[in-house]
Image (cartoon, rainbow, N blue to C red; front, side, top):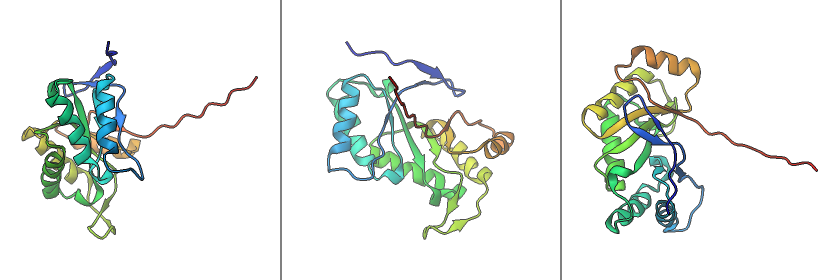
Length: 187
């Protein structure tokens, strides 16, 4: 029996599982991400989170597609998240960046596409001054094109998010950020 993971309804109307498999790792052996995704899907995970900068979208997509072909899951039962990297914040770069991710993932759409960080850099990694509203117009375009069902941000602070919400036609559904817990037990 595969456990049911609770979901939350996003402002896009789609349900997002509240627990997902994050696929970031500094070092990994070839095939590790594919196997991790396969195992996760076999055990009940339905939310898979990756990013273009993780350099593992091909393996993540392979794991997803293997389990779809095997009949373990259907695409419509999955919630796949990926992220726009900092050197693709110009409005004209957003759609091509997601299309590249979709090609690597071997998917027609993602369920959630996030602006990974609220900072822009050029191809050399040097700071670039691109307003978040420009990037967001590109994000809204990917929804219009059906390349992503839901859009959001990652690592935005309250001020950055408030400014974005004021101008957005499509409001961000998610602000993803890392949380770490440490437990200390005393006798």
